[in-house]
Image 1 (cartoon, rainbow, N blue to C red):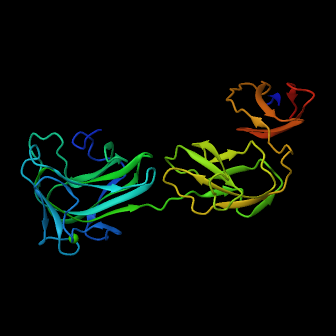
Image 2 (image 1 turned 30 degrees about the vertical axis):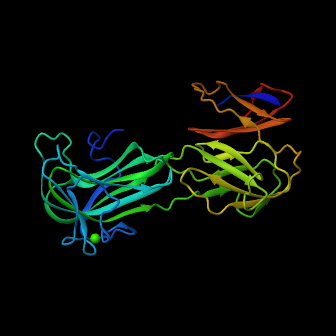
Image 3 (image 1 turned 45 degrees about the vertical axis):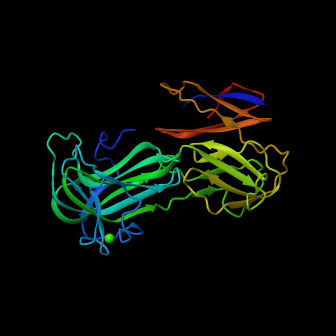
Amino acid sequence: MLSRRVAFGNGRLLPALAPFLMAGCALLSSGGLPSSPLLDGFEDGIAGWEGGTNKTLDATVAHGGTHSLRLVVADPAVDSVYATRRIPVEGGARYTASCFVKTEGVVEAPGVKSSAGAGLIVEWADRGGKWMQSGQYACGLRGTADWRRVECAMLKAPDDAGFAIVYLALRDAGTAWFDDLSFTRVGDSIQKLAPENGSAFSNNCPHFAWRASPGVRAYALELSRDPTFAKGAVISLTAGGLPRLQLREPLEPGLWHWRVIAPGMPDAQPWSFTQTAPQNRDCLPPLMRAKAARVTRADEPFTVPVEGEDLVAAHLLLKGAGSPGSAGILPAEAPGSALAP
Ligand SMILES: [Ca+2]
């Protein structure tokens, strides 16, 4: 391994304690949009919902069908203010939740610090069902009003979550009905960029790239000669949180399949490429260790460490504000010399 220094010149918050309104939640207009796909319209009862005895099935009030869940709270300091249910989720995946809420005589209860009206809350539990993390809140409905839709959008399950906890909430005094609850996984998948699917090239150390997904902190790249990625035939490489990876161990020639693994982000369709360079050819590009440098004079030098197997020459291009760019080649026999523009 040669090393060159190229010189440039010229250069558990419980819901009762958590904030009520968080980003991503919205109170939407009344009526209108259907909630689809429907998770629960309460047409088959309220079995599976936890809470106090003040939650009941109402066969006379409904947004869809003929039934809804009714929650009556006389005193939020005493009565249960939730009907809750756990929904299995995939860690890291994205979801959106919504339901319709009808209110009657909902008033802020005096002396209750966490008074928040009626609405929908989504939080997270681990794979054992134990509460682990607060989530989003779409509450604040008060008074007497017909059906209004509330939504917690842009939900992202923590990587180690096993369940979402849905709370139909009435954190005030009054009566609220809930109906047409939906909980939907948002279509989100890995978008690969390079090497392009079906491409052929002579490079045993290709550079892989895919589109960055917000919130993903750990990608892994998998390579295999087997299109089914059978166990034992897969090279798995960690890319950290970056949506790219420079392969540093050469691949043997032939057809390769690749895919990207990230929590909650399926990569349903692996891509393939054909590599034609001998495995023992040095195709690895030089490794430049980027380091910020402050340059205050036009002729002030700074250095960029460059490493590469059998490095013969480095060709570097410098671009910056006020400069069209300067380029030059540093011969291997003159390490450390100034780069001529
Ligand atoms: Ca219903």
